[in-house]
Length: 183
Image: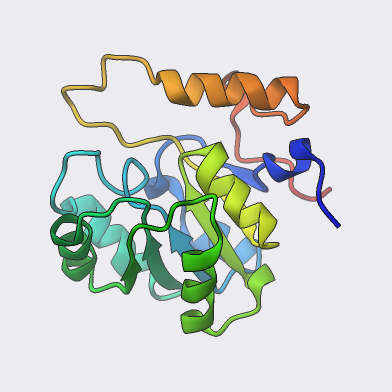
């Protein structure tokens, strides 16, 4: 049966700050064994062609507790493939999230029960929606924005939050805390 919109757009975990704040401890606390990661603005700024040293370090650390796979809506093989290779991670491009096809492919490769795999991204209407539709654990992170665009606000994100709240999901940026999941 289909889930109501407010449930589909409600992340299981809202992380304060970027993905770099997602620690092995948090991953283990929720019993996660794998993570499907969005790329643009989740791992790297939109124009970046390579992974930061911090990100490489983060991947090295997280790998000890979880299997990772990149799934991007971006179609640029040189860019996404380059980032994936620099992190030594499998990847899928042109995912057209919230379409589930490429995420399903990533899940098959990981060979883990869907409930033990998190979909991690910075967008509600692509990452969280797709992950929730598949029954994954969904984690919303704050976008990593290119230094020269960091001063501009994030109109798409604000619009998504506004719409979601109208539909009954609770994602107010003011209270974005790593809390509540022992429903």
